[in-house]
Each structure stands twice: as C-alpha cells, then as structure tokens.
Length: 229
Image (cartoon, rainbow, N blue to C red; front, side, top):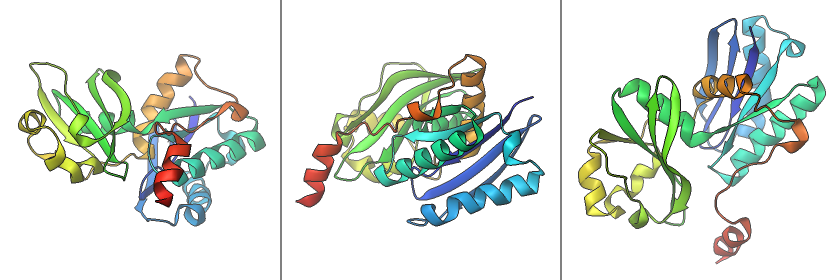
C-alpha cells in the first residue's frame, strides 16, 4: 500500500495530507501569506502524528495550480526539494480538479463549475463531471473574465464552487440562472488531491522531481506588467 504525502498552498488555505494504508489524515488551515513558514512544520507534525518516517513515503503530490503565483511556487518548490532528498517521484495535481472531487462528494449527481479568484477581474475556471471517482473535464481549465464563462449544455444540475464566486454578478445572466447557490467554502485541499494522485500513480503518470512545473494559465510576463500599473 502506497504512502503518499500531498501539499497545497495555491490559495489562502495551506494544507498537507497523508495517505497511508488506505487512511487519510490532513492538516488544513486558512492562513494567508504564511505558507512559507507553515508548510514544512505542518509536514513534520503530520508525519509524526501518523508515525510515518519521511523515508517511508512512496511519492509526493502537490497542487500544481492554477492559483496564487507565489502559492503554487511554494508547494512546487517544497515538493521538489523533498522528492530530491528522498529520491521519490512527484504527482502534480490540478487544484480545480481537486475542488471538483470535493464538490461531487458534497453535492452528488451534479456537474461542477470550479472557479478561483484570479484577481484583475479574472477567474481560473473549469467545468467537470465526476463519475465513480473519475474527474472528467467538460471545459478544460482556463483563465478568463467572468463575463466570458460559459457552460456546456447538459440536463444535469450545476453546482458552482470556489472563491471565484465573488464575481458571480459579472457572469453572463444565462450562466447565473443555471448555477443557483454558489459555495465559496470549497478550497483546493491536500486531502482531495490524494485520490487523484493515487490514480496518477497507478497510471504511471508520476514524474521526476526536476520535471515539476507550476501551471499558471496566465502569462507571467503579462501578469507582471498589469501588476505594475
């Protein structure tokens, strides 16, 4: 049975989780701008609580984005450093897919719009159907103005989740009408990344530490120019 450590710092939430012998334990905190100081101590405390030594890990999963530029760099860098030290593989996980899996467990039989506040009047978003634990993309992840969000035609009920709900009134009216109540209480979290990481590991999709890359979606050069205006 694999032991997988998962890390996520892509939003104001900071979380670590461990899959060990089929059981999951997690430390999840809303701690804006403290991820650099909290992440590794949280890892050490979680492993100690589980009685698992660092060298016993089989792989490390991390939230590869989209999300906060600084946040996903923190998780990527920490995961790379640990993987290099332990000589174990990495499993990059989409933050939006992890949110969709969480939403599907809370809202069964619905298709899911996941959206994170990308600042600058934009959202990171995607649409998913979750079947038997498999997260299937109906609209692949992208960054856009809220007014450009669209939903595919489906007979199922929609559930929208994530911090992108702050832009609800800027969505097209046709989209607003199909979404109903938006749950902004669902965050990317390490525990929801573990099932996706296990699937990736079983499919042979693990990567070497030096191959890990954050997924920003937004062009970093353009982001810097806008941020300076």
